[in-house]
Image (cartoon, rainbow, N blue to C red; front, top):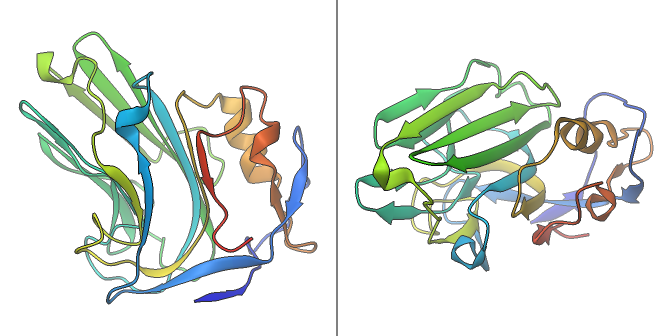
Length: 219
């Protein structure tokens, strides 16, 4: 279901990049709605990546996936970002990792940028919420099985692999880069949202380059 959008409950001045009209988003009913993008992380040459999207949660159901993908190699298993009740959560080989923000069910739009940086023997995941450069969630995975790991599954929006953990709420402007977004790019994406004019960031204008995939969810 698509509806007219007001992306953010606050007003911000755009800085650094241009804006685009943003008239639509997609609603997910928590029962069987999802988007199968067909975009595979396995195709990325550089295992580093960043994902950006907006979401508005309308349910506190546990373990729901606004975004998911999957990797399963050796002892390493990673399935994407979930929202557990009112906060972000990542499950990796070591177990559950909870974000610090506990108010994601406030009825407002929130912006999430999620990055994965690969180095020899470990991977570091960061979750940046609402333009804040202090990560809401940091996960370090270590060991030989994490060295050069690539996500093998397709990108799904609104559910885990299109089969479970359905998301209830709204999602907009989903994008993926095969690199780590810089701090200035993270703040530029967030600050380019304007409530009064229904505009969002033109992600093709980022200093480091356009996304490898971009789903505008109706626009």
